Amino acid sequence: MLDYFLLSPQIEDSGEFLTALDSSGNSLWSKTNPKLASFSRVYLQITKRAKIDDLAPSIGNELILSKKASEALTAEVRVCSFIQSVPAVFYRRTVSEIVSDKYVFWWSQKTHQVLDMNASNVRFYKHYILTVNKWVLRRDLVPDYDIFLGPTNKWIVSSIFKSVCLEWNLTGFHFEPVEII
Image (cartoon, rainbow, N blue to C red; front, side):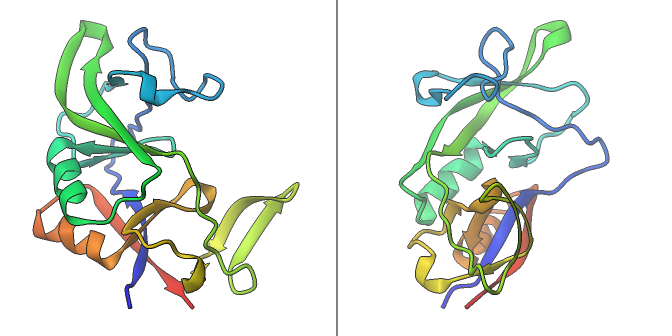
């Protein structure tokens, strides 16, 4: 049986979070129902960061992965079929400088409801899950993937995913164990 983890970027002291922009510098998430697949690439504006990990910190429900990480994970783990990707470019707007074009932007078109609602500690707002204070997954609800998007836009990954990250020496990944029953 596999163990599962909540995936998040390891945050440095700079506190700089990223979000996807179009070529005009407008946030893609601020648009109604963004059709991200229609973009040939997304832009990520950075100001402070000199080094960018294989998993960059973001403010949304996306994953910003290095090409190395994206290729390793795509080749070695079962990626949810609802996850899509486009190339990503890091740039500094103040000097119009492309810092790196060696990243890939992943997002999911589906959120999987995998919580055991009796064992988890969940806070609701108008019948929607607002926060989860204690994560307990129901094994029968967990899809047969090594990475998928769960409730409250949290990425859930298997121990296989974690092993691949360690084997490939991928940086920036933080794994928080979750209970599964």
